[in-house]
Image 1 (cartoon, rainbow, N blue to C red):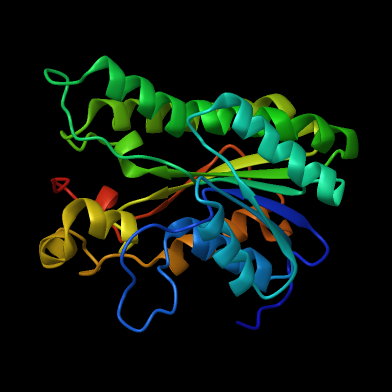
Image 2 (cartoon, rainbow, N blue to C red):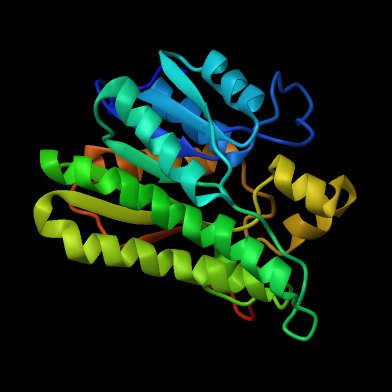
Length: 266
């Protein structure tokens, strides 16, 4: 992919940059949101550090990148692992210009059936890992008066899916973390934004809901189709770049028009 090199010379870290699940027909690698984001940032000139719980998946992403990179193992449910991954990226390249917090787990239970264990796991992966990753990267960014955070969220953090309390609550809180960073550190050269995704044709969605449900998922989208991970990645690349230099504290919704429709489909 030949792009204009908006991110040339920058170093990025993508939390959740592997991909676990079935590939689309013709794909050499399963293309989840995190992998697509890492490849897009690399195609635009960034050196990309890819973190994933499965080191092999992270290495596969780095091998497919257009330029140099680094694979690190990170367990998003473990606080020390999240901090160590950022330290490894900083130790290898001396700085981070861009941090993308993409990792997440979905849930299945409404409030009546929500278990403490599922709640705590969702909170650890969907929220705490993003907070700790940003916290670990923030001080070196502040020292250089430059840095961009992009949080990959979900429309479930804006609108109830009626499906999973823990997912909705943690995705809403993730946006609060983004806004906190954006407002508190805007005057010191730090930007923070979110890409809020609707239904994306990713390995996670296919694994959770099955291939057979794709027509029904597409039917509720005004554009008439599911989104692609590459479209999520394009939005992330924009917010990470200087093209969004006056954009901070914002949630860019990438959902094919679902959140703009009335009544909102379930």
